[in-house]
Each structure stands twice: as C-alpha cells, then as structure tokens.
Length: 311
Length: 229
Image 1 (tube, each protein chain N blue to C red):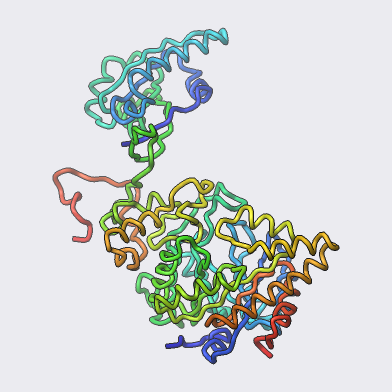
Image 2 (image 1 turned 180 degrees about the vertical axis):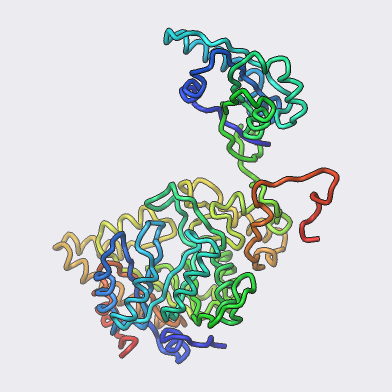
C-alpha cells in the first residue's frame, strides 16, 4: 500500500516514476546564495533536494531556512533532514511545526553522527529520541494531530517521512531489521548511503525483499569531486567499498590531465552505475549526493540514458 | 562498583596549597578496590605531597592519612572523622563524588577537596585488569529485553532502537573503532537465544522523569518498587 503523498516526491513515487533526488549542504556561513544556486542547478533534474542538518556533526547553518528558501526561491521541493543529536523532543516538535508552517513536504528522520566525530567534539550530545522514536513522533503528529505526549496540535503538519539506510552495513541483517522497525512505524520512503557498484545495490535490495519491505527505496550515489576525496573515503570511512576498477580509472584520469578528465570519468562511471542499478533492481529512484559540484548530476543522469524526473 | 581516578598531582597541589594542616581521607570501598583511594594510596599521596613541598622549598604542610570503611555511609564517616576533623583546615578526599559530599556535609566548616574524578559504574575484569562502564543508573532498567547488555550505557548514543550507521563489523566509530557496538552485541546474543523479536520490537522514547535529579530512595517505603505501579 502506498503512502499518502503530501508533496511531489511521494506523488511521483506513487505514480511509479523513477525519481531522482539531490543533496545540498548549508555550511558554516550566513550566505544563502550558494545553496539556492545549487537548487537551481538541480531543479530540472531532480524531484526534490535534501538539505543536510549539521552533517557529520559539523556546526552549520540550520537546515530549515534553506529548505524553505529553495522551495520559494528556486522552486524545488525540499527534503528537510533532521537529526535527533542536537535537539530534545521539545526542540524537535518546535522545528517540525515550523517546517509545517513553512510548507515543507518531506522530513528525513535521522539520529545523526555522534558529536565526537564533528568539528565541535566537546558538545553535549542530546539523542533524547533516536531515529525510530522520531519517526514514531512524526507519524503521530501527521496522522493523529498529536505530539509525543498526546497533546493536541492545532492544524497538524503534513509530511512524508523518510529514513536513511546503510546498504553496506556489516553485518547487514540488524540493519535490515532496523529498517523494518521504522517501516512499521510509518516511514514513507528510504534514502540510502552511497553504493559504488551495482552488486552492492543488488545485495541490499535482495535483503530488503527477503524481509518483504515494500517501502520505496532511493539508492544513494555519490560521485567523487576529487581524487583526494576518494582516497580519504577509501581510507577513513569504514563500510565504504569503492571497487578497485573505479579507483584505477579515476586515478588514471587524474594523471592524464587533472580535473576535467576526472569529472568526465565520474560521469561515465556513475552514469553506468545508475543505469545498472535501474536495470537490475527494483529501486524507486536514486539519491544523488554531489556536494559542491551539483552541475555533474544532470550529466550523470543524461549519461545513464534517463529522462530527468521532471522531463 | 564506582570507578574513580586520582587527579593529577599538580592539580591536587594547586587545590591544597593554602592548607597548613591537611587530612587525606581514603575510602575502603570502591576507591580502594580500584587501587586509587584506599588507605595505602592515601599514605602514598601523603608522602608525594610532602616530597613535592620539600623539593620546592616550600613550607611543609602537616599531613595525616586515614581511611574510612565506606565514605558513602554518613554515620560511619561521622564516627571515623570525629577524632580528627577539628584539627585540620582542609580535607582531601580520595573517595568518589558521593564520599566528597558526605564528608562535606559532616565537616561543614572545613573545606573538602576532591582528590579523584569519579568516572563511572563499572565491572572489573581481572584478566585484562581493566574496568568497563556497564550501568548509567538511568532508573529504568531494560536489560531483560536487551540480552543483558545495556544500550543506554554501552551505546555511545544511548539508542533504544539501534544499531546506527556508525558501526562496522561490530565496532563503533565513536572512540576510533575500538569499542564494540552495543547493538551488534545485543543482536548477536538475542539471535543466539532465538529472541530476535526482542531486537526488532520498537522501544518508545523514555520517560526521563525517572532519572530527574536529585533522586532519593528509602529502604522501607514503596520507593523501591516500580514507579509504574
């Protein structure tokens, strides 16, 4: 059974269209132009854009303001990411109500990376709720018009609720069981962390099907802005498996002549990856993460041979 | 037991520098078991402080080291301190934070200085000779459904519905992939017991009123029973 659609993202998913979403990161700045510009770049190619909430526990601009502004200024639907790391349930309720008032249609409910991995590791971590508890709270607010403590909300907000998943989790079963738990609580869609091979997507989707999870899944794909970024991820981000062939092609491109060949190689590699995932899995779409070089997303989508979401 | 760690000597010297007569009070309870704040350590600390003063050519402090059976017992502590408390202008406590405050309540007019930092409630593994944090005294124990492994304490995020994406191969990213992910431990144990139903169940957000500070309990009243009754 498909979820009621409150925005364009869920509407298109329900219609069975293969969707793309993008991602933008408001950083440590008061400048909003960059994020709005990024949204404009993505506008005709994705159905919605995620706005990150203090990603990897770096203290950045509040995600709600850009979520609102990309809708108003760039005309792109936002997926407002919210973590439970920095807010207790009172603060979550406040921000959720504010998001509803501002016309946000999607919330991605996350626990969030631990404070100690970020740029302000001395901070007191909150984690009053975890992502499952947050989904539970959101569902109650949307469907029943009640907050966590059963207090009535005047004009309750209407959102579709997204959750994250880690397709490369090892071991995988507890991750799948956790997804199942949140699906039962009312998650409408799932956006995953990045995969780097069709096989990784296939294995994950196979596990998902074993547990009869029907919630639409957008597989995460993240091209490499630079070789340095790739090397860093391979070295320091456990669970990220970048196939050797991809690493070799990108390194070779870098040697051949710097940035442009690397971008070209990215377009080729990730275009093929998208095509492969579409062909051999039953995913609902792709979540693209190309922070700081959003312009590559349309190129990758085109290379994969798709008409874009809004096409 | 309560795990304490002695503060750095320079810090202790700084905190006690104005006292002419200092009473070091160890505790024969937890602090003694962890070999930080027992009688023996109180005596060693006395020698170290005296030596430091001597080496620096400072006026010596008159120091006496004693220890108390259990500093956290107000009556035991009061009895043990009675012969000494009038004679000293400062007390250096080597017990836990409870001990420091118990002594401070008894010796109202004498400053009581903490000589240790109270770290956590832990298990002693004599094989590795390490102490591991096991309980946060959250006031609402859920160990019956998590395979006897506490996610409130042993998960860095205290998740009720883990694991999160910060684990790989059963290790937690917090602390640099050294610590076990509590939720993978829980998953493995419950799976072994054929009780994955307990793993998959949703645990609703906790009611933090049960751990509202300051808490109190009494032995004879209903306080010890479930607050849900």
